[in-house]
Image 1: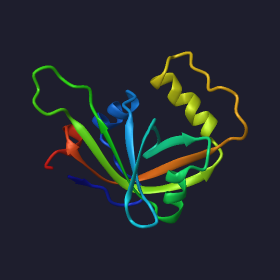
Image 2: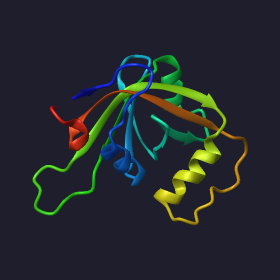
Image 3: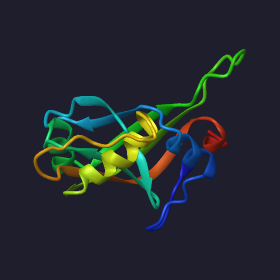
Length: 146
């Protein structure tokens, strides 16, 4: 398990490469009663923050506004003959920022959909979820010593 300290995380290059390859990510937030809420999202990097774009102020964003603790999990591509697929579990603190969703979704769509992807016209600029990474665990080169 890798614990990150200070204001700036040091996301390992192996995890950066995995995130930038476009795996679907599971975002876990906490409902007001403390129960988990899970959503599948697209993610990308902005410096050492994980970002995702959302056109609506959905349940997950309301949850983050109430309690910023989040967990993001993602699985690496399966390797033939390997018993356990590599995966990452990222624990952090989310912040909901007004605007920027269209730009984030346009950028991520080029990875998740097609290189010529253009996000369709929509009302408003949505919301950006920025997650500051606090801990990285899982199974893979990013989780040495886990």
